[in-house]
Amino acid sequence: LAKTTQPISMDSYEGQEVNITCSHNNIATNDYITWYQQFPSQGPRFIIQGYKTKVTNEVASLFIPADRKSSTLSLPRVSLSDTAVYYCLVGLLASKLTFGTGTRLQVTL
Amino acid sequence: NAGVTQTPKFQVLKTGQSMTLQCAQDMNHEYMSWYRQDPGMGLRLIHYSVGAGITDQGEVPNGYNVSRSTTEDFPLRLLSAAPSQTSVYFCASSLQGFVSPLHFGNGTRLTVT
Image (cartoon, rainbow over all chains, first blue to last red; front, top):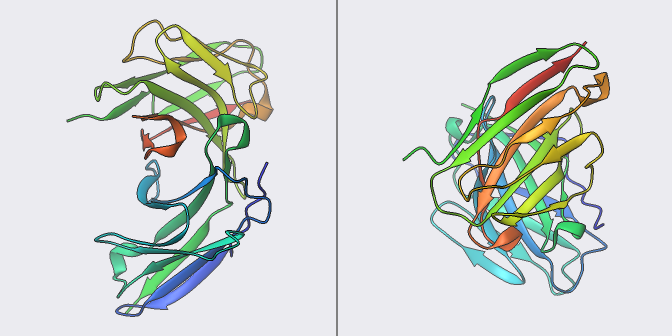
């Protein structure tokens, strides 16, 4: 299984850009990288997914270097409502599916 | 649009008791999966299904059974609960396996005493 490592927590002020990195040294050739956001007492919610280079949607960007051994979720101009736990997920097949341990983001004024 | 619905939200069991966690989705997704979430750990896959009548084991299947008789429902059964099964359980569905976004329910918090 691809071991995934994330920082336990991060703090940010409202309006700043936040970058959360996930390390996945053993990523397999066919594995995708997906990021989820989770609020207390809720299930994780899909944010963004990528395979290589850069992916951008209306809420975030995902940067994946050429060796794919890490990925960075970028949240532009965070607000208080972005306070949550963020998980990276690496894998394609059930036998290789690995969630990171999550990064708790705290946004303050 | 309900999405993925899990019941119950909370459950307390005594060691050795059995129970079924319910999961239903209304998005006509073929893939469904169960996870457990423990403090300090990411979600871990218990069982999954690629369609009605087909199930398979994930990373931590011991102590759990599943069946998939319809596209909509994917119940998770604990045959003889153990304190090590105290956790938060999430069900998810997706269109094309793990390469497509997983839609999660809001979880069942289970305590085994």
